[in-house]
Amino acid sequence: MTNIHIICLGKLKETYWKEAEAEYLKRLQPYTKIIFHELREESFDEKTSISLIKAKEAEKIIAELEKIKNKYIIALDERGKQFSSVDFAKHIQNLATQSDNLVFIVGGPLGLDESILKSAQLKLSFSQMTFTHQMIRIFLMEQIYRAQMINSGRKYHY
Image (tube, rainbow, N blue to C red; front, side, top):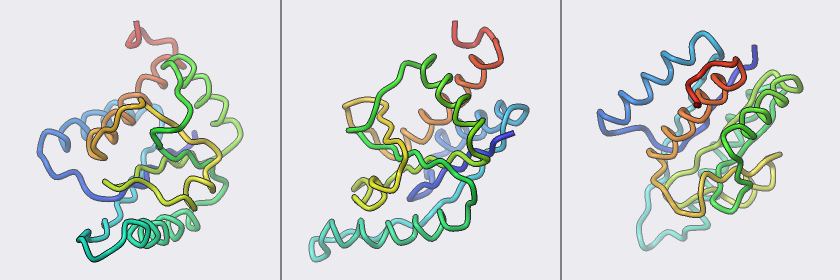
């Protein structure tokens, strides 16, 4: 069974996001192990450049990535590749045969540093629209669950 790691900047704050995440974690238990790596976002003020903040956050992400062996890195980015749910399921299934650990990286409000995007084997986009990092975290969990249902022939997708 392939582990799925989700490296994310910031925590879920609102109860409804926490409840949604808990529900997907419960549903995914029979299919895969989800491991969260919640990293603290850097403080943002008008004196600090966005590039400096993203670079500091990248250092934290890289430190987490170094702890995970035999991994395939997927960075969430609005300019990344888009999949249908069925194609995403097939892609995840294929990747699971190649790597012990699939690592999804969810950036903070400012997005991901270019160094992280370059280190990813896949840049994944859910839409050309921008979503909060809390919201996209739940979207990601839902699509991972949907992929598991599709790949195991369950009717959830249809």
